Length: 102
Image 1 (cartoon, one colour):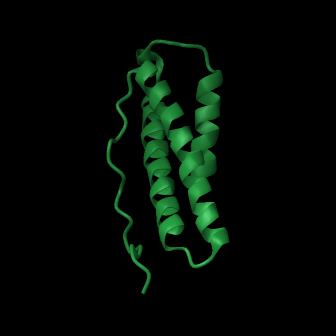
Image 2: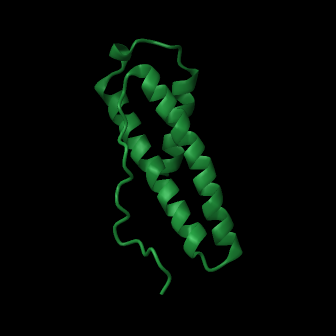
């Protein structure tokens, strides 16, 4: 769901005409920052699936998540830069996620 909202926000932002950063509301800036965090989480989870998945389908899906969300994240970074918005640079922690299969 976060991913869908993130991508929807990126698509909407791309269609909007270029405006000065001062025209963005606090809500818009907050949304962009949350979308960036969500996108980074999707990449991190995709990496976990690609590395630790038990089936080829899960590994393939993980790789696709990394590819798709990395692209969306790059687009969001570009838009944020044009609008003068600083996005978070680090991925939030994956609380409770196993990094190695047991």
